[in-house]
Amino acid sequence: MSNGQPLTAICPGSYDPVTNGHLDIIRRSARIFDRVVVAVIREPRHKQPLFSVEDRVSFIAEAVAELPNVGVEVFAELVVDFARRFGARTMVKGLRAISDFEWEFQMHHLNRKLAPEIETLYLMASPQYSFLSSSGVKEIASFGGGADVLVDLVPPSVAERFVQLYPVPRPGAPVSPEE
Ligand code: ADP
Image (tube, helix red, strand yellow):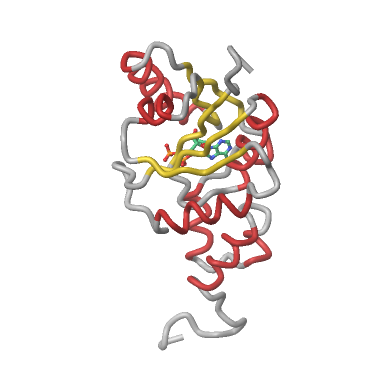
């Protein structure tokens, strides 16, 4: 608590879809802050999402249902304006590798310029998730990585949806009519 207000953090991202790596950051944030708001970008500017915003939100909502101090919201404004709207002075982000650092370094300074009162806090990805990205999971699923592979990478509702989207080919089935 700070001045009688719950200490609130936001975890922003496109979550297309949420992975176990995102959930690890969200759970760890929920142990530090009184309240965590997972902020889902409605229309990411730098990529066309595979999943609708409704799906992206419902995958997260289901996965965090057991965390009483975590909520999920959609935003379509500057992330710092969203943080202000929810009374958050902290944005939490996960850092996987050096490749994340460069982009996060830029965004950190831009956001500080826009809102000097808001800090971005970086949590190091847990080693078992440091290779995990939504785009990597989408690639695996689209090439037939089935539920047995996906179950370690994404929550069950996401794994199920991928299996519906990309049914795993039957063993021995030809991949092209010529074969
Ligand atoms: P963006 O659209 O900016 O790439 P994402 O929706 O992919 O954002 O991710 C939101 C946040 O979660 C970012 O801070 C990102 O670094 C972090 N993140 C993504 N995958 C992982 C992971 N496997 N472990 C820890 N943090 C992660």
